[in-house]
Image 1: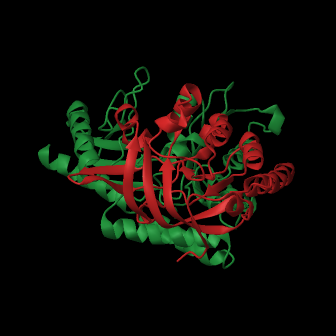
Image 2: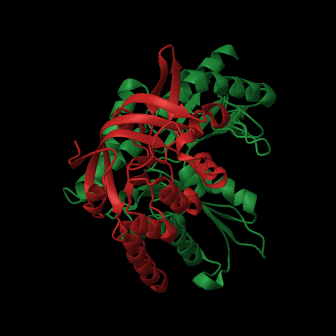
Image 3: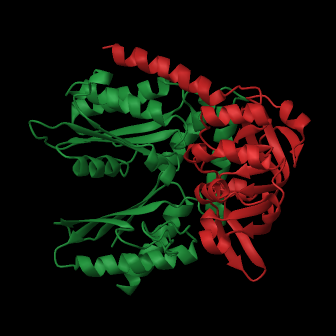
Length: 198
Length: 281
């Protein structure tokens, strides 16, 4: 379906440095989810690494609030596409530096603060396909654990998933390149031409 | 009302798990326009596969099953209060059954109600109809694309937007340029023009219920809908904002009379997963 370079998690510094904006990749291994409330908590409460259920170093933090179904054998993932990453822009740079993430993944790209943190800390931003929630849920092979499920609920909790060939596109690399910044500049140029054209 | 309750639960299921044929066809025809091997082509192929898998396995197309928005046309004599209670009950059942993601969060306590009901949640608009049938339109509007919407008050000096359709055109292009890929393009864009903010917000969103091939009855508006569709695509934002030829699948404009002093324009952005459906009772 989608071709890409297979990568195993956690990512090494070499893996991250080898990625360039525009590369299509397939993730394999353990990822964690986190959206608005997880980010706010990590930055404001600064929990110690050992207080988290899982070592975040080198892993990918996925901006996702999945639809989960409680079954007798535990939680099952029903739908799990990305949410808009820009909402956590004010927190993400701190989270990347503090926990040594290999990457963050979501949709729509992130801003300058995150772009600089990715460059300094050696991390990448991955875009996956918004709305493709069933396709992506089928690439999550196992729900391993959760964190803050009681406090934040199923949408906002941190889920630890094992993924197999989970597709994403590197759109912000550790060398300062951002596909989003390029597309935004080009579309702004076109916009200016269009509104001055009568 | 019990049968109607089941009907509304089924409507939820259909709307959450299958895309309307006009939207799916528009996405299918966008695919060959993109360069083979491009991120736009790959993303569209995943999107098409996702639509198919969601329908086959009866799962929600997108994990964000949105804010449910109901447009209800009520025949004379039916109680709106009873209809509202039935919709609320159906919402609770559908949340469990489909399942829908619980999305209703209390502003003060930050607690999620867990069943998609709460103050003003779902959104329900009633209107009496001279017809004998009850008509219920349901749209599941995701948060990402809702956040990409904008309200404008014309004239707007920084954009040189005057109080005319050309000024409206500038607003729509500005809103999409600002949205970039954050609301899941290719978009369906609803525009409302009129006298007051609350009025144009509702009007713009209501345009998203229109089928993509529904041409505007007012010639001037039909023309600007087509022009805007072409121009939005020229912006090159593309599928998921990574570049490409299709940034929008449709643009729909609705107008109300305005006050001499006011000229409001609302742009409501709908993601490619434009989930809407109708129940006629």
